[in-house]
Image (cartoon, rainbow, N blue to C red; front, side, top):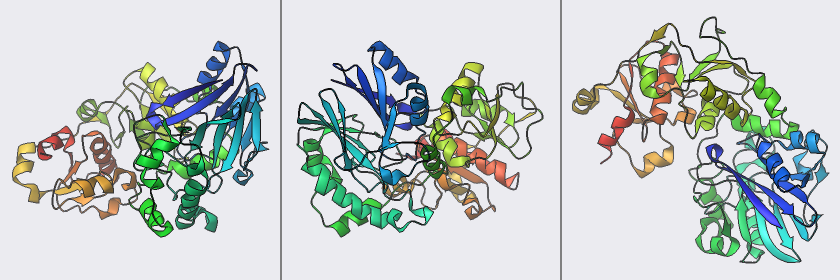
Length: 446
């Protein structure tokens, strides 16, 4: 028996392959959008993919479960509460999948979503591992507020938080302390708020170190879980719906994105996302472009600024980078609304740089906008009179920014402020100067 963990660092996502070496069969758990790594794993071990388990319809990435089924005839397993559009085999409390000496046992663990399951792996009758999806993380548990806007009372955050309390205590904490914990996410995901950098743990270690498994009343747990959850990106509800339906073929969908020669003759209502470094962007960019740099969290910020099905263009430094970024847009299902990508920039404008010394001496002459998350601001406020609007909420709250004074934008290191300042400039269209403090913010953090 072999367990292989696959990591998508950009989305802090873990997926898994369980291999029965005696049967040469594989079960996949929570696969990412690009299925190629799983096919390579199967080829390397001369094994057949016979099943794909979805622990729930994911909000933060698109799964390849339907594509894998169509290619390999693997059975798709998920909770009957999932109610997907594709054919599936219900996999709920105490139902099992046998894979040679391996038994995979479903445990219904609602809390992150009403249809969440965890999978207990038993080998030769002994509890060995738990694939916990978004229920139990290392150091945290899944957030309960991602499904409540659909009008279902069973998806309301307080109801789900109460279910999470019981899923953790009545089910997962009763497993053997030696059971290895394999979650669907690590630090950096927006599906939780206090995750560890580690990629696995044990039930026993989590009982000691994980805040959500400590002794407390249900009411206190519900309050603590709902407190200071991060913003919900635009793409989260979209991905839930897409995963319940099943995404198009990855390679076909990515290949369908047109590569155009330059920024001429663009659709008038489409956003322009420029992924180049902020120093290059500021020296010359297309009017109205938004600078979401090619970085580790590009997908997250793309799906937090661009709305689902909203057309946009992608600009990259070179063609290899452009092709890579197009593939990354597909991991959140955003390739189908991508009107085109290009690398040649024409008719550019420059951004005015901020005079840091003048800003230091005359802070009262600026509207200072802090685009960090609320919890970052609470932990350490940098400017006493700044306005806090997290980048993920900026498009919806742009009217809250006063325009009487030049706007100086900052985050913690410069990535988000580059995106935010360019976004504000594109919306207010010259009504006020928008200045990016950028990496100079470090001068104010001591």
